[in-house]
Each structure stands twice: as structure tokens, then as C-alpha cells.
Length: 181
Image 1 (cartoon, helix red, strand yellow):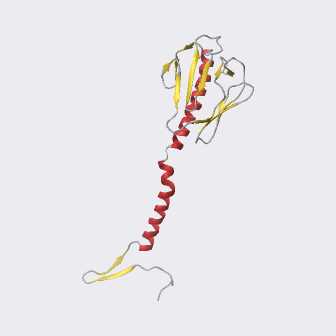
Image 2 (cartoon, one colour):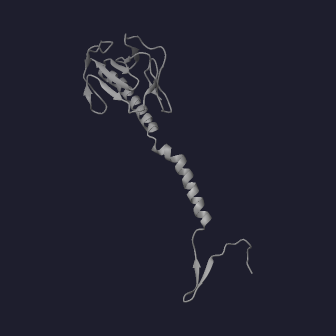
Image 3 (tube, one colour):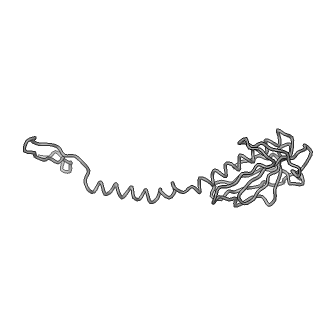
């Protein structure tokens, strides 16, 4: 008599020389179900894992944030104006050759965060990544780290930068030059 009506009992097979032996394994339904679940996961998660656009956009966002912070800190450390220029796919930095110069018409060599140097440091986006929102014109960080226009006039409102595909925007606050996302 069975102790429980729906209890699963192992399959038993009788072998002529070995006697009774327990048989184990998966049923056909279990195997098919696992294959269906794996197929659904591959169809949903596969394209997201293989799509590098989101990773490239986030990387460019983080690099832009780092370059803007580097520009502000360099302006404070050198007590000179650091100019920031934008195109749809690049960011460039230059430093004024003299301390009292409000723009970078005569640029001095600037050593970047990766050790590269030249009259301009340029950060280029990878293919498929671009800024979707940038300030209307280039701007500078003065010797106090404050954002100013190319004429040397202090900002009155925050500037927002957006990299297409990145989850958050980069904001540069007026007065303090605080850069955050």
C-alpha cells in the first residue's frame, strides 16, 4: 500500500543478472521546458548583452565628466583660464598662456589626465555616440574654477550636457563651477 497517493517513485527495471536497479534522469517535459526557458532568455537578454552602444555612451559620459572636472581643477591649480570647446562628438580643452588672459587665443601646452599633452586635449566619442545637448557656445573656467563665457563674464544659470544613450545629464553650476551628474 502506498503511503501517499501522488508520491513519485523511482523507475525500477529488472536486469536478468543484476536484479533490481534504480533508474534516474529527467523527463522529456523537463528537458523541453528548460530549452524553452533558455530560448526566451537568449532572445531577450542576448541583444542587450551584445549591444555596445549603451556601454560606449556611458563611458563617454564618464569621460566627459572627468575632463570637465580636470579642466576646472587645472584652472585652479595653474591660476589660468582653461577653455572648453564642444562639437557634437568631441570635447576639447586648452589653457591660456598667461594668468590674466580671459580666453585661450594664445594657448599653452596642457598635459591631460592620461598623460597626453599638446596645445589642445581632445576627447572623441566612439562611433554611434554623440552629445544631444551642449551649451550654445564654448565656455571657460577662470583661475578660481568658476565657469565664465569666452569674454570672461560669469555664468548666471547652470549648463547641462547630455550624451545620447546615457542615463543622466552632466550639470555645471554657476558661481561655484560644481560639476555633477
